[in-house]
Length: 541
Ligand code: ADP
Image (cartoon, rainbow, N blue to C red):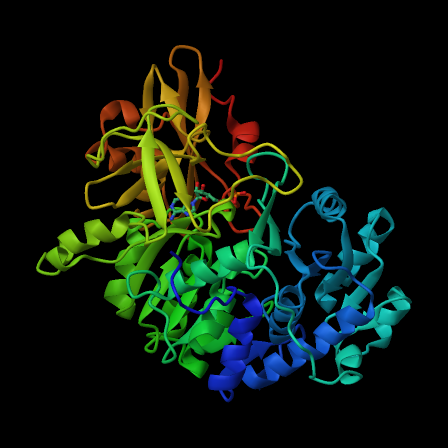
């Protein structure tokens, strides 16, 4: 017997309809590409999304055709997202920091028919245009601009296109399993692979990230996603924001610390999200300006491990709770987030901080297990210290990659993340490393993340990467590559001595190399592959 309740497909269009109807005057504050600020509302975003849906329909696109975006976090990008997915097309967000060859590869792989871009990216789009085999229309996400038209005569302008349309558009009643958006992994582990989200997976993920034990987002929040909309859909926050009708601050191209401090203080941002390198910049700028970031009650850190020293600074200097979260493109991305349980509340601040360091626990809808082999099926104990291969399953986890027939799952239906981790019996996850970044020294594993976190706690170090260097006797040994803080006077002996009472002797790096810069991926992660290529042989005679 079936239940007697209504069935409504879970659709992205219903999120923007909800926000437009019940949070009509809710604010979206957005920074343009020329750095000027603009304020709009959920009702206007919905209306413009419908206007743009009319534009897309006038192009004769078919359901599930791909429309690509290369844009910052701004209000027009947000409107175009809802227009694209809401009208049954697939929104393919592209990371502009990819190498041009990778960008060409993914546009052709996705067979994008329309490409929408911010003015900033005109030189990039113009350069790759002749290589894009499927794109028929190029839309600049701005008002008409003669410099842009001169550079690309066939370009269309977003503001002109929507001005010619009405907001009358009937969102189609799609199957909730139909595809809504496409995001490629950033390729730090090989060729980029497409992950194709559905309306259903996106909606369930949005519910999950709003929950109090996840990111705890409500109508009373002023949320600033610093994580780009092209990095796993800004971790799903633009959808969650419409679902709850919170105020949204979109930082556009200004991702430096000073610009972010300014936005937080001006617009009273209560929750902001980003990768550790973003927070590094923010802390420096706030310390310099004397801002206490008073409105910021919490910030979400993910994408790479959160250095413990960072958690402490946010708490002690800015009275801001740092929520550590883990996920990946393949997991929409939220896999875990770190919130306490009732039994933790009486613990000392120091003990609570230790819990905060883990990547947190899964929300309802996600299951985790640790196995003793990559892609294996044999689960090992959740004892908080035996590490193994992290696997995940759930409503918003990938099943197969875009355009690939074969399943991406283990024989019993789990996705192997490529991360090495432990789980404890409360469900808290601790990532030790990515399997390819682990250092194997004489048959023993050393976590690069642990050594980096310790280095980041040193007052004279601004950024640190630990990689495996080849070694004649031990196969691999850790070496530390570090950037000193401005004007800091630091020697390699000082940093090696600093490790002495913190890790076992055999885990202490064999060498310290000071550099001026560490290469970062398009999403702000340290490119350890490049560092291994550059420094991987320094220990060989
Ligand atoms: P890519 O795989 O191309 O780097 P993703 O953004 O999908 O792009 O990266 C996912 C990976 O990032 C995870 O598998 C994990 O290794 C790492 N990661 C994400 N969040 C955290 C975190 N909080 N702590 C440690 N590692 C993390």
